[in-house]
Image: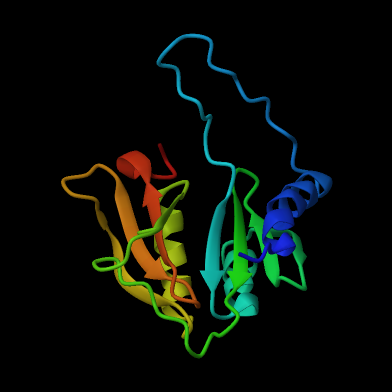
Length: 173
């Protein structure tokens, strides 16, 4: 078995770049009592994408996130909304990459992002409807019997993204 150093070094490089770009290292609570969780939240989400620039633009230009670095030789871009980091990796062969099917593939079913209020969700829906690179699975609707309102889209590379307003909050509330 041949050792691939780039695959071993990339996680360390990614964390270094995130920290160097202004991300504060969070203190992780070490469990002291049996049964305490060994983890403390999401560090980042990694998505393999067919079109790195279109997917980066979706997060940065459409959603208002900021670019927080990248690795051109990998190639990958890091994006953040200030609360979560997403790593976007360019698949080496976009033409032959297999699209994810939520019913038949094992893996990330979708990424769910919180939106401040229903009005913002509706504005985002209008923006995304006008983007030919984004496919909308369904527009804003109650999640089950509510009160959460959500919608589901596929970003330009085909990753499934949910936008949710917990409690169906309105701006006036």
